Image 1 (cartoon, rainbow, N blue to C red):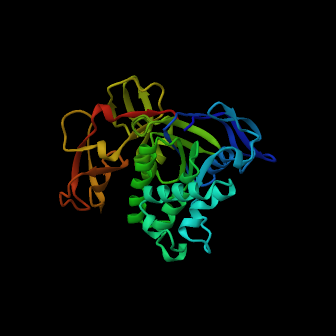
Image 2: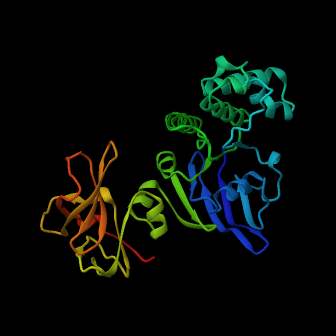
Image 3: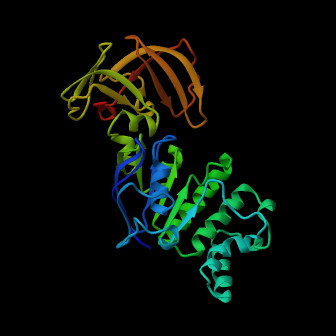
Length: 342
């Protein structure tokens, strides 16, 4: 396995900037997720690493090698596509063997490596089936085996789960993470699904408009987002305009809250819905009227209009039977206050 390094990598299409000076270091055996909305530059970045798109500027290294100008076949990367990209006329065995045959690997070695790869994804018993005879989840695992069989230095995953239904998505997600960790695969994955990113990634790279907005662990990005975009894209958030005063914050509606650390010059306060506590304790209290109740299974979300006029989301881990029109008191723990400058 190898490391991956991007040094000021950019991609321009005429005057349009698809990716702007991305710097990234991916450690050996690390799984890094490029996360963001459609058009943010994440897939373009992945395809520049794979060699399918030529970088306008910057340097791409896989291990010690500068591969910026190398074609894809010289980079030894395994790529799993969103749409599986299997050959419909070839059996599972031959789909997985395809890359090895192109590399002119000996037949006995092909048999050994394909069998091992199919065993890893638990599909060795379906080696003679055609793709059309398999479920979407099975086809994606075939695509994963095809990427793994060449023993890549780096595994690249391009929205690998987006064509699967919710149950299959969860199963294949667990399978990919298990294989990545057990094999020590250096892996870069692209997704727009924040839950997928949070549960799979060692680190997340949040992108918007071709720019990296923040890089860090899922916990770091969730608890200390760098800006409003990251806070809104990673998890649910309440945003209240106002002004920070040391560790305190006064909202535009006049609600005064006290935090446990200096909020700098923040002009926006972020509160996670699940961090807000129902009931009043005498610190950062407020009251309001419930406007809507949404049952989420593991939690119940309340849309609460505070007496000052702000509407915030509050999540309870239990279904307390609350209804629209009920009055409710809340408390915001000081540690829950996060100040944002934009």
